[in-house]
Length: 257
Image 1 (tube, rainbow, N blue to C red):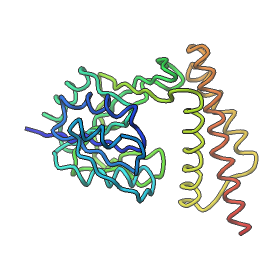
Image 2 (image 1 turned 135 degrees about the horizontal axis):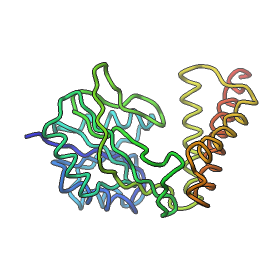
Image 3 (image 1 turned 60 degrees about the vertical axis):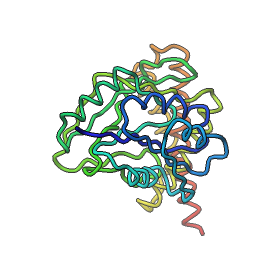
Image 4 (image 1 turned 90 degrees about the vertical axis):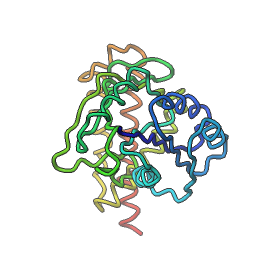
């Protein structure tokens, strides 16, 4: 019978981690949490719910942190969850059925029901918003991107779309959204410059930002989500602008150093 390791990475997720772990308890044979020096009660809460908790303060980006987490797993299959995500009973049943009969090169690609400021978002590219989250432990792992990391898909990988969705409670409020996007923009720019060793033109952030708004609000039907759709599309435009402007400025500073 196939076994399942649930894997989570955290930093100061006390308000989320309890519900996250509880949603995994009925399907996972082990729950593993790798924490990057939380200063709240994230680790204590996780341990009280039966999770195996490890600490790693050598932060090198999300991709490498996930690679480190996977090395603690001992089961046949891995399911990944962020602290602000929840497995529904229906999805849990589907995951168990998947690993019981899946081939080692199959990956379950799970849709996410995203909530922003507590509101379910159905457009803006926020649904189905699929993420590859269930894979054989020995078949693959994450790449080493500092942010927006992805599972590696070797030649011959078969990606299976889930029928059910996991719940994602992202961005508790506007300040939370802005703080996360500024953090991710800086990480993205640093990663991009390190890998490609070049920046972008000064005009690029303006063009990319404007198109990001048009794509999300018009092409991805964000206008159908009302005020929240307009807010999300505007914030995505700012995030995209910040990514490329940070890249431009970092590259210029490096050239002039």
